[in-house]
Amino acid sequence: MAHSGERFVIVSNRSPVSFSRSESGEREYSRGAGGLVTALNAVVRRSEGSVWVASATTEEDAKVSREPAPYEVEDLRVTLVEHAPEAYDLMYNRIANPLLWFVQHGLYDLPYSPLFGEDTRRAWEEGYLTVNRNFAEVAAHTAESERASVVLLHDYQLYMTPLFLRERLGRGVLISFFLHIPWPGPEEWRILPGYMRRGILESLLAADVLAFHTHRYARNFMDTVSEVLGAETSVGEGVVRYDGREVWVRAYPISIDPAEFEELSQSEAVLKEEEFVKGLPGRLLLRVDRMDLSKNIVRGFAAYGRMLELHPEMREQVTFLAQLQPSRQNVPEYAAYAEAIEQAVEEVNERHGTDSWHPVELSMQDNFPRSVAAYKNYDALLVNAVRDGMNLVAKEAAVANEKDGVLVLSETAGAHEELGEHALTVNPFDVDEQAEALYQALTMPAEERRQRAQALRKTVESNTIEDWVEAQLKDIVAYRDHR
Ligand code: G6P
Image 1 (cartoon, rainbow, N blue to C red):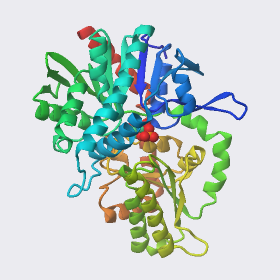
Image 2 (image 1 turned 30 degrees about the vertical axis):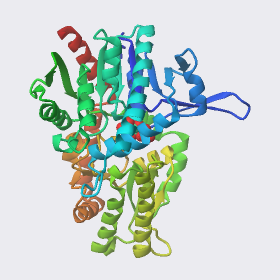
Image 3 (image 1 turned 120 degrees about the vertical axis):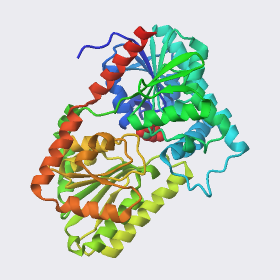
Image 4 (image 1 turned 60 degrees about the vertical axis):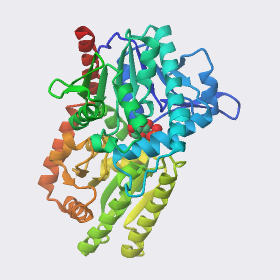
């Protein structure tokens, strides 16, 4: 595929590489994983010479950030941004991950929380705004020194960067902002304090192109700026007019690289892990998630327990493998959730297990090869998120699976817009419905399984990560021509 010839500055909080020192004192690095980072690697492939700006999070990262930069590693050119630890902590652990993440995924128990006060404003000003100013400063400097014409900003940790960047660079550079998590409707944005809500919306409207995973999020965004800021919106054209500017609002459903998963499936590490996966008794029910409240992991175990209660003949006929990666453990809600998960697993195992059978096999560590081995072998995959921007597990699993596995999919995961038709759809709050869907998935006739699995795979293959990048580049060029 030809590359675009544009030079980009890509900005995300999470870095594609993390640096450390070996015992002998040499600099080492490891490539980051996760949906966002993997996806942005595809953007890099399409834009030679681009620079990726991200937060420094280790001591060695901080050293790299002080070098004249960009630092070259494999096919990447990376510039790391050093933040004062307290500012970063306030941004990450007080504003971005509990607050914004919770509002946008609908995780608050509203009669009791959140409670905003002076400390919220302090975390916003001293943490979130400070970190966003750092990002804008480094991105602006990089754009100037690299003569880049486009800055691609990614995700909710960077909501205020478009504004600061615009103040610094004027209108000469095209700014696009991509959101990887859900954008809920205006009522939910009203939960946030006024200064935060208005600040975020006005900053986003300083960008040129705003992009979401689904049409629903794009519509919700337009409703929000129309209600909160009184901006003029045209849903049909995908345009917001505000303060004399025109901002394009688009939906580009993110995807994966199917070829990468086919190759990975045959790797030695994965083949080795397959021995473990294949040794689990009965049919395989799988979930693969970061340990995040939005993933609805606890209710998933309750649904599985309910299925074993409603269909006792399924006992010893199935194992539920839960591959869960630890995440954001410094946020108290996440630490508590990890405990709730362990407790929920214990309950199911104690109630239904036997000497030779653990109904749930729980793994709470990052083991990607084992996840891919499980992708190949599941009979049913549970994705029951409360809300999810997209959910790439559903897509990765669909192309890697070799067993005509059935997907049980939450209607509020972004992936449902594309995959829902071929999955068993569930309401993430309805435990009985999920229990029945699990049973149906595990007992479905072979021909129906085959048809659904093929359709899922085809759907993913018809919109790959390369298509995702392509669609954005096309609109960037169109926006520029239009302006
Ligand atoms: C989600 C977010 C990303 C984030 C990732 C991992 O996918 O959209 O922005 O990088 O989770 O979370 P973490 O907090 O570890 O970066």
